[in-house]
Amino acid sequence: MAGVRTLQTLTESFWRDDYVVSTADIDLVTGQILEAAKPQRLGALASTIIMRRMQAERDAATRQAKSGDLYQPKGHYEVGQTVVFSAQDFETGRVVGVRAGENPKYGPFSVIRVAFDAPPAEREFAADLDVPHPLNAPIEELVISTDSSVSEADLVRAFEHYVAVKLEPALEEAPEFVRFNGQWFLRDLLPEIHVGHRNLAEAMIYEAGHPLPAREMLTELELSVAGSRDAQLFALNRALGEDSRFDNVSSAEDPIWFLRALVPEAVYQRPSVLEPAFKAQGGEYIGLTMLDMVEEIGDELDDVDAAAVLRDGNSMRYQLSFPHLHAGSMPASQRLLRMMPASTQRYFPITMVDSRTKKRFDAWVVPEERYVCGLKEWYTSSSLTVGAEVTVAPADEAMTFTITVAPVRSRRRDWLRTASVAEGDLNVQLQQQAPPAVRVDANMLFLVPDEEAIAELMAQASDAQLSLSAMVRSAFFELAKLGGTVHAKSLYSACNMLRRTGAVPVFAELTRRACYDPVGDGLWVYSPDLEGAVYRDPDEMRERPLSTRENTVRDQAIQYLGR
Image (cartoon, rainbow, N blue to C red; front, side, top):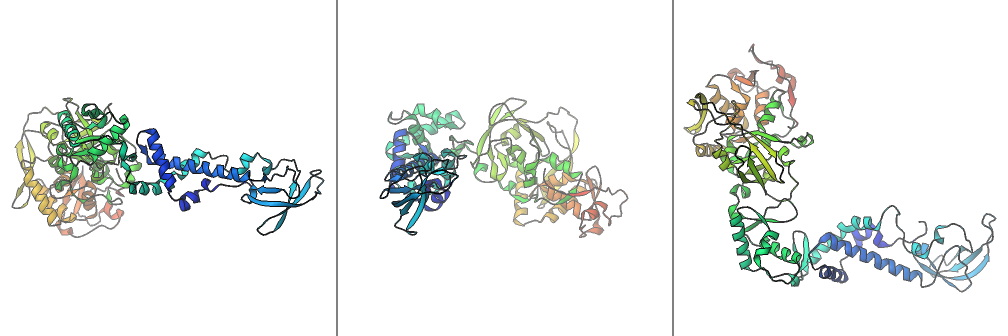
C-alpha cells in the first residue's frame, strides 16, 4: 500500500542481516518450554521469537501513531496541531498554515502547511479530502504494510531458518538447555536416567533380539513420575544416545535403539572384499547387447547419477558375485534404495523374509557404502554360490522385504567351474559336481570351496594395485584355457575374485581393446597379435577393423548412462 509503513520484522533483510538473539528471546524460549512441559523443536522456538517480535514492533508502531493525530487526507486540521505521518516513517510535524485547495475534480478541500524538524522544513498536504485514497484506511492498516497475498504464517516460515541458525548456537552455549534429535528441553526438567535404567534397556534389547523404540522400554524402567511422558522419552533417548552400547538405527524421526554388539561388523567397517577398485563413471563405451547383461547382474558399482531418472521397479534382482557372497551382503542399488524411505542414518535395519521358508531375519542397509549386510547365514542355509539369482521385493509390512531364490531339483552331475588359488594366482578348473540347489546364471557360476583363499588373493591384488587392463587380461586367459571363448559375464565374475569391480568397466575394456573380439551370444575371443591396439571411437569399436576373424560380430557401441 503506497505511503504505508513497512515494519522491519516483516522484511527478510532484518532477520538475515540484523537480527541478534537477545536475553528476552532466551527467556521467551524458556517460557515456551516450561509452558509446554515437553521438548520443542528448534523451528518452533524460532517461530515463537519471530511472531513475538512482529507483534512487539506492531504494538510499538501503533503507540507511536497514536502519539499525535495520524495524518489522513480526509482529516481536518488546525494551525498548531501536531500530526503524525505514516508515509514518512511516522515523522511528527506541526501545522503552521491552512488554505483552500484548488482542483475542480475533487470539490472543496484544504491544504495544510506542515513544519518538520528535518529538511525540507515545510511541506504541504491535502486535508478535508474525503475521497478513496490509501491513507484514508483505518489506523490499524496504516501502521504496517504487508503483501496481501502473503500471510503472516508464510512470513514466519520464510524467516524461520535465519532465526534458527542464530538461535541454535545461543542455546548450545546456555547451560540450562539440552538437545537430542533436533529437540530442545530444560535440564532441570529432565527425569533422572541412571546406569541401572540403561542396563535394563540393554537387557530388554538382548531379550527381544531386535531394535526397540524407547516408548516400548519406558514402561519397564519405572522412572520417576516427575515430568510428562514426553519429557521421560526425551530423557531416555538422550541417555541412550550418550551411551556407546546403543545405536539409533531408525530410518525415521523417532529413535529406535539396538546394541552395537549385535550389529554386524560390516555396518561399521566395509569388508575388504567390497572395497571398490573399478566402477562405472558414465560415458564408457560398451556394446549395445551388454546393457541387458549389466541389468541382469545388478551390481551397485554400475549405478551412475543418470540412473536416478529411470523408472522405479517393484523389485530388484541381482546375480551374486563372490565379494557379496563372502561378505554376506547384497547390492544396495539405486533401485533398492528407492523402495525405502529417505534416511539420514548411516545405517538402518530392514526385515527380510525368505519367500520359501517364511523365515524372518534382520539385514542392515548402509546407504553411503551401497550395500546391505547381514545375509551370510541366509546365503549358507540356502546353499547359494557365485552366480545365484536373487530377487528382493517390498512386502506389505513397512521396512520388510521378501527375498527369493528359485530352487532347482536336478541331481545330474555336471562339469562346473571351480575357483581356487594356485601359486598365488586365480586358478579355474572344470570339475564334475552336483548342480547348485538354486537357480544360477550359468555364465556367472563359480564354485568356491575355499572362500578365505580367494579373499586373501583379492587383498594381495589390491595391495599390488592390479590395473583394470591387467586384471581383465589375466582373468580372460584363465577362462580361455577351458574352451577358447569367454563369456562377458564369466569374465566379470572371475574379475571379482581378483578385485572388486562393476560390470561396466570390464565390458568397456572388452569393447575398446582390439585384442578381444565378440563372436556372438556374449562370447569373446583373444587375438594375441593385436595386444596393445585400442579402438578410439564407437564406429571402430563396432566395426573392429583390425580383426581378421570371419565370425566377428558387429555390436553397436554406445555410451553407458546407467541402468
